[in-house]
Length: 162
Image (cartoon, rainbow, N blue to C red; front, side, top):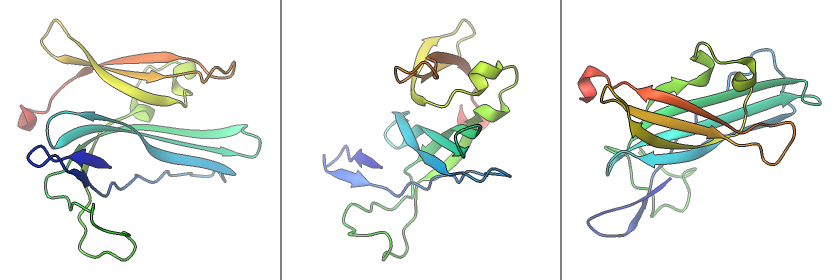
């Protein structure tokens, strides 16, 4: 992950640890896991959208994990000058805190729960109660087997973040 240092304008890079996918009884023949979107919350805090997909055999059994993390660059090591993380020592990655796991969202229809191509997010309008809205998007890749959908959430800040 890269970020521009405001005081110098030079690019900085940080180690970003991906959360593993718990496959359970699934024995995947294909798995994809990655960071698909970053949204700045300030100069050193971001929302990160991770998407993990695993399928077994011809895709009849599938596991989808869509998770949103709040990350912070504070205390993380700038690795821009390193040739390889494999040989580096003392590297501190970005700090992460799970904000939302779509698997835990109650009330999603089976069609929405099976969406696999979430790759975008943005803040929406401020809601009547003064809280912010967050919009997640999954697109259909121009495929009849996938669907475009938007999920809208109300952002509730914890007391220590206010």
